[in-house]
Length: 219
Image 1 (cartoon, rainbow, N blue to C red):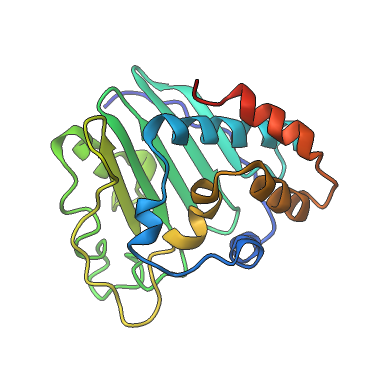
Image 2 (tube, helix red, strand yellow):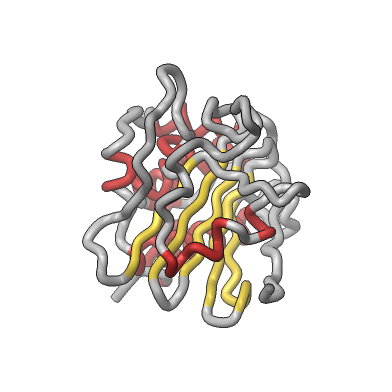
């Protein structure tokens, strides 16, 4: 197993997930949310911008939400979100493309909410060989080596859209993708500013946010 360096992340107050749900009013559309993730270069740029802005707003890392590691493993970069309440996502950028896994700890699709204590059927079953190693990656599993995911997406560089497994969603509740990926699917400086002002409880200069977005934009 390749040794990977963990990104530094801090804790935030327990209502962080609800903040994003309320602030962006994201619709629960299980197909749209996947289509709306930007392409790989744009997604990488957004993740780097979020991490850079979080460092500016929280230099000590106490309530930092987003992080980005360019040295996670040889040839791999890792973007992460941790909300301090057990909700999280990781995005691995590789030579093959990008792999996304997210975990909503209140989702009925959590492996801890199923009868067999296993990942929800279909979430991880169809991950292609190019990303298969990440399914069993220790950093994305619990202490019993169980993959901790309620949502999984992937995209190879030759793909024209994000892909996911065939999933029979529960009657009530979902996988958490709508709110976890809301800032990524919106992708605007204004959305980040709105979230950051509420989360950090301080004014956030939109001009600074736009400048950081521009510095990390895909040219």
